[in-house]
Image (cartoon, rainbow, N blue to C red; front, side):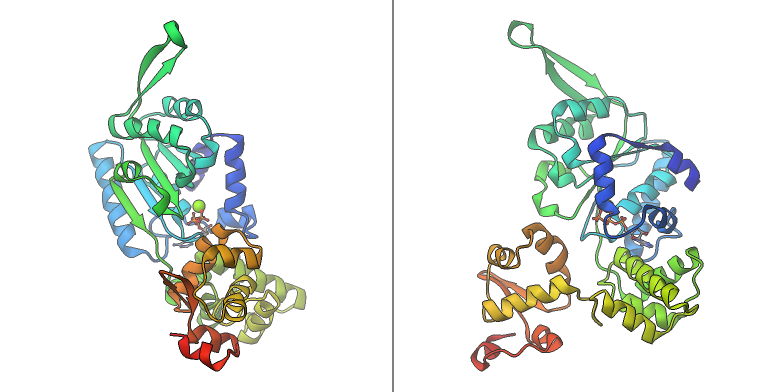
Length: 354
Ligand SMILES: Nc1ncnc2c1ncn2[C@@H]1O[C@H](COP(=O)(O)OP(=O)(O)OP(=O)(O)O)[C@@H](O)[C@H]1O
Ligand SMILES: [Mg+2]
């Protein structure tokens, strides 16, 4: 089945292959990504409620021989949104057409793509929040009534064409659900928020990935990697690969906790999974802004780092572990954050922290 799926995958445009590269950018080699990506609901670890709901929806649509309702996945990067989209298409035995918001630059791109869909095809739009407004409007009628109306020619020669579409399934993925307009959001019959994984699930993912990479790892060592993975399967797989490299260079065959510590320290990953950027973020607020509150624009300028990276990647995890809080005046760090990093603040600043 997985081979079938790979054969049926259609990449829509040049820009889209760029998007795929971005998806794999996190030092994931493409070969490993293909091997490690779960191909069925059974192989997918965690997110039980979502799997249960999707499994019912896909089975029902198969039974009725109808297209599946449109699906939206949202949540931080690396939690399995693209993976679930592939699995859906696998499960309903449909074609998988992969594109992304930025690749659909002009309405003609969208109309061309939509008019070529076959019944029950899965049209996957990654970074759906980045679709231009002019293109988004075509999606409304395409999703709701399976048709698009567009105008050809100009002036006296202008003509409206009503194009009927096959009943397809749009699967959208985004790390920024807040940027989706409500007409678009409302057209998804199935909408799922992917949340960070707990250590147990991540450790199961490390064990599963190790087996697929022919590595032997015990539960204790898998948990050590899991604990530093920021609740994120992509990071768990990446750290596993870094430890594997370290062992290989040291000519050691079995994992142990000391080696995991050593190799991840070299990578700049600490015991809670914070990396250099997380630590710089906390340090800037502590040292330059007396612990906050401070706006994201100022932090981004001080760190010389893109705002989107801070709000999509850095902040959600620091919020989750209680190292920062958001107030109406901006971001503040907490006592837990300065204790973890061993930062010394002026007494009066320290007293203001939560
Ligand atoms: N539940 C899971 N079980 C096992 N492996 C998983 C799971 N979720 C994700 N992975 C692994 O993590 C990698 C990243 O997942 P995926 O590409 O689906 O994330 P994403 O949510 O689409 O990220 P982005 O927002 O950056 O596009 C996959 O290649 C897969 O190997
Ligand atoms: Mg993705």
